[in-house]
Length: 172
Image (cartoon, rainbow, N blue to C red; front, side, top):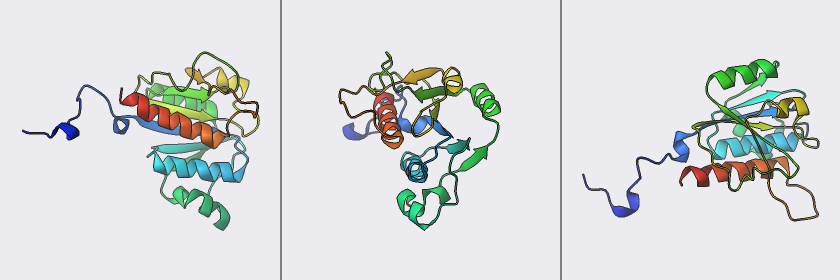
């Protein structure tokens, strides 16, 4: 069978479509952040969002539906009361647990090798990030290098950077 050069795909390489991604939010309190997480989940075809802790959850009001572009109606989600049980379940399903640290660590999101087909992204509180207890349960802690004095990027921008890095690195 003839496949035009531009359409050829290296069958030994995985593509972004081969990666199953779920998002676990914990104590995200700013409603617009949660709405934008749903919007990103729709754009990046995230399998499911698990909301835990004191986080805002759908149904969203009119203003938040504008921010999410009604993605909460299209993305599968659930509220999870027992975060420890969820972590145990997703680990048993073969997911690698990834979260952000807002301090300098060696694992930059830009050069991290995502060598798995199942990724669970953990997002912590809008202001304080992941709790110390939750952070210790992760397989990988990543950082976004920042040379600016203005602080670290928002939780939504951090998620967008991570998802884009997964796409770029899955095609290598």
